[in-house]
Image (tube, rainbow, N blue to C red; front, side, top):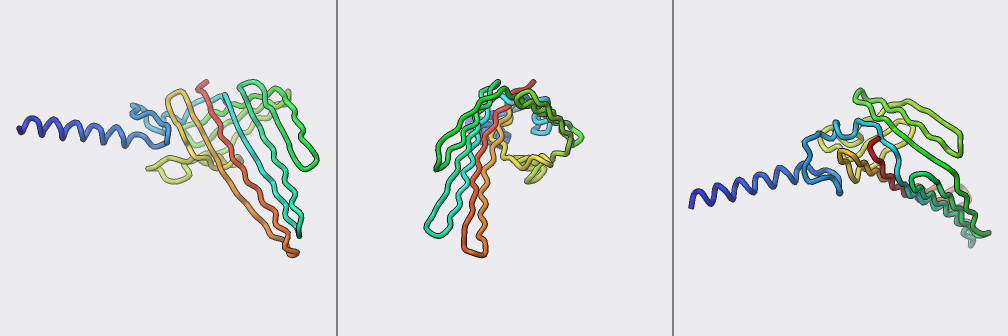
Length: 183
């Protein structure tokens, strides 16, 4: 009887340890690498979906513009839809980010042949213990939905609103999901 209880307690203890290793919603159940070790790497953007809804309400009128960006690993498709119609364009695109242990990052973006390189700082946004969000100075703060040894999924959802002196309301809602593969 004591042996059975010992086995049950051991199994429950191991299950608790494995479940506590998982921080993000889609993180691996168990990893031998810390979140610091997993995030510090060279990453290549493999897919992205972003939607921005801009609404202006004034008097009895409402004007809405919806912009979407969809990236499939090689091509960015941009669509803008408003009260006057829809416009869509596509162009070659790539994005890479190197997240360094000492708290810096280097990013390289090539958009329709134009290359931009930036170096700045990164840090854990919420705490050194939880590490479920990361801030890149100059880019923003992102929730980490998945951080595996070879995959990183970042999401961001923001809402802002402004009312001017005449009572006109301007609001912006932005949602982005980016999936990176280890380079």
